[in-house]
Image (cartoon, each protein chain N blue to C red):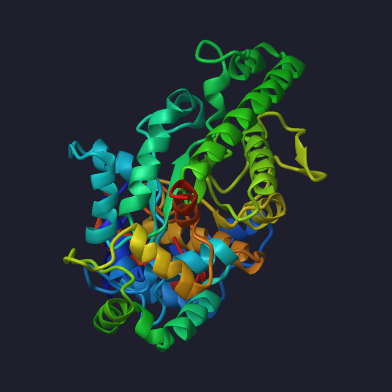
Length: 103
Length: 348
């Protein structure tokens, strides 16, 4: 069922910009159109590019904000989220908690 | 005349004529409109639904540009439930890397707030570790599940035993006591998990035990949002109608019993919910088309009445999907497309 939904109507998660659009909904209660436009402007892509795997793979590589393939010295997990928080201009709770823990 | 291969609400295959399919769609939307006193779907919307359900393909999808956010609930328990023996963090990585989830959720197999409060140290360390590894947003989720607070599992008298005895006031008093216990547990668990790095807290199957269950969750949300203003709170409902098991409970002056999704979301917003997930239960005696027309009608009214994102619940037996453990892709994809493009969802 998860696969059916994601293929039928999903943005694509970290293959594309799905997680980033989700973060704008979560942090600013943005509706989908508003969240997509906001993320697109911050990534300097078109709204239609947000769900395009080929375009977003390059964008995520350039910005180093996490990709599906686990490659050496490429941002993963918490380090990707540090960059995502800065890129989107939002607070990410676990990033802030991490900063507190390593003070 | 085209013969249309589709399914009933229990998942069984049925072949409908074009006229029967149209009839089902009209009756489904009318059922929702009459119950909730909302607008039925328009002729154009019904025509689009007809196209979706009469398409001869095994799988359909939204058009380019109409993709939405998929926020998965109960992810770690769903992997465990099918007997795939992964650690919970591995399950989250499966959702993130392999299932293309836009958000994921850490949860315990005993998926309620009451049982997890006793093992919070383990849940917290798992959330801290998972947060280091995950890139996509990570929720912690559980069910309010007020029934767990009744004897013999909990401290309160059981209203389901009191009501058949005609002990209405005692049953109401028991539910009010259950609300106090549940609020305390939900605030306790939600606070600790947020302080351990959760991007948000998900209250799943809210109102499953009726209006008292809904009230407890609204109160817990209100307290958590005051304590942590930046916390993302997702409220997923359990059905389209709040059962009046108590019958006289109110929130902000609004009686909770009898509310439909377009009114449920108003209270959820007032309490501080960030993302609202309406649930519309499937009728197994009707076709999936009937059920989806009905679900879209309820959901569309909810979306139009909401200032916050709406992520409809679309799992087994809700949101137009059949009541079967592994809903078939033909049914899932049709309901998914219909709910997103006609219901105007922000996610699911």
